[in-house]
Image (cartoon, each protein chain N blue to C red):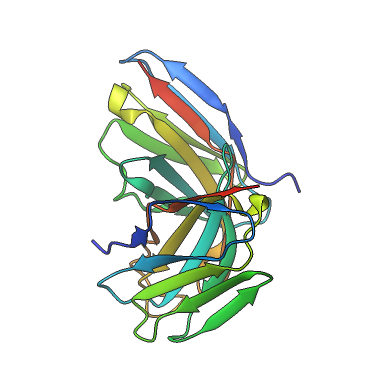
Length: 116
Length: 116
């Protein structure tokens, strides 16, 4: 079983602060996705990273995939109350998009609260 | 499009009763996924379908769980008999292709199941 460990489990900060959350595994993933889930809703995809060392930016959010494709980080600059939610990472172990053994594995998430 | 539609949103049932969860995927999506989310185990993939055919049900916890997809616009997840440990939020998701490698899965709002 390929596990994704997310840290911290809970994070409560003030509006305007910066933060970084982590997603780590001992296994290699061919791609990794980040989702945000708000209370009472399903997860919503934020980004997919596929290349080791890749960095993607989405407004104030910066996503990085580790060189060895075993870990990823999400950095939020100047957090806002609207960033509050559960941030989930999910890894795909397949070697190519058409491969078998599909088993998208989710971490348990980081619950972020941004206080005004 | 209205997105992935799940019903009911909430279900409370007594132990031993049959429970049926319903899902309408986004029109044109070839893949449909059923997930279960708990605090302890996070988001787990139970089963997924491609073009209405079950591809991998290895995530289904036991024989009490069954899923069907009689046509491209409808799927059910049935638990019979239900047990208190089945209490969780069950999500349905659909996508144009397998998740990962840039493809996006769209999640419904989930069904919160409580078995007493």
